[in-house]
Image (cartoon, rainbow, N blue to C red; front, side):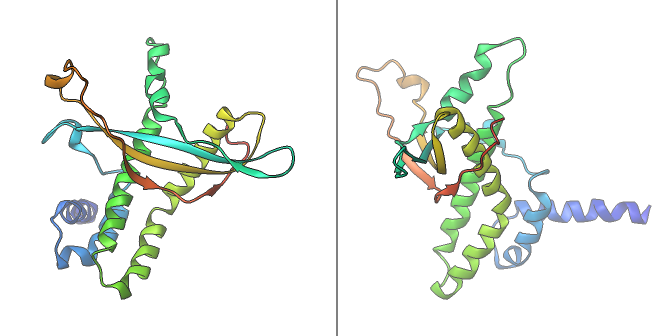
Length: 207
């Protein structure tokens, strides 16, 4: 029984640290608690409370392609998430679960942006080390994003030689219900959140 209690105690302690407000004590063990909790035990309860989300996240894909002359050119950014979100409507009896993929990447982008923003509050001498740490923490997420973007690029540019891909995550506010029928329509500015560097195209992932 004592051995069975050990995982329960560790899990409870990790939950406590993971959900505790920022403090010097929490910061000392936050990395270990986060690596234990994510990606299997964490939840985003924003959909249910304390308040619903007030913005939509958009994912823009940009690609570098090599033309017939061998020159590499950049495509215009293409928003890819809304089409994926609408995909379940095409077959309502057994809808695809593909919208869960960009949803997961949106959560990753928000958490990475928040972590990167916290680095700016650190003394300049500590920023390089801290940046390396979060890049290592999210390395798997970036690899998965690289494969996802490569698959989307293969679909968008099937006959072209894709060299690299890049994602831009942006926010667009949701118009409150009370304002939906106003004339003129309320403005919905698109605000940048996170832009990745160019990632090497991964061939074959769309098959």
